Image 1 (cartoon, rainbow, N blue to C red):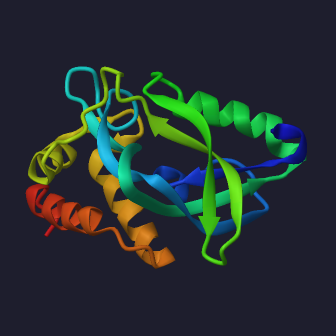
Image 2: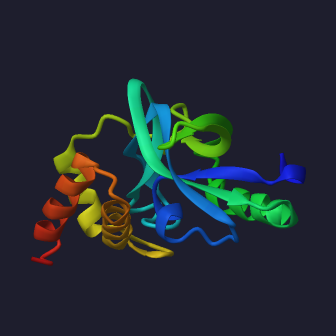
Image 3: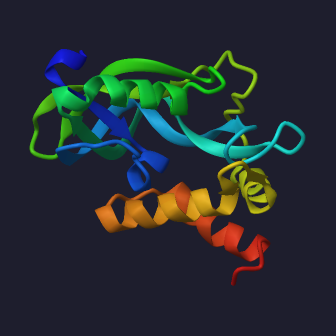
Length: 181
């Protein structure tokens, strides 16, 4: 994978804080997964005592997730995959998998994707949006408030022209709950 470079699919914080060098980025779609606040965050956006929520790719038949695919050049591949594994696999709740993603121009490429392990203790798929909003409005972790994570992701999706109705609803509701309106 790394000797020829690779694509990595971003759908949450990688959109606005990739943290690695890339030479190209394209809007891409991953079929069979939904962007979802289905992972309890005990490190970055919450704590063990008061977990926050972060986005994950949750396997859902018929669903899709639009995001960005970033191309990592061969010269940066080893250091980047090491960085991504340290960042994304911190609690083993994500699985590193390679999936086909489709660019808007119709081209398909393999991309490294970090998907939720639905057998992991941090998995919490199926939470109602109101419960998600309540958690996100209050949680704080090592990388800051959970609200910041939501607001940055929603803003970057808008900037890219990617519609996500659940994130838009959550952003508006969390602003009310957090007193930011």
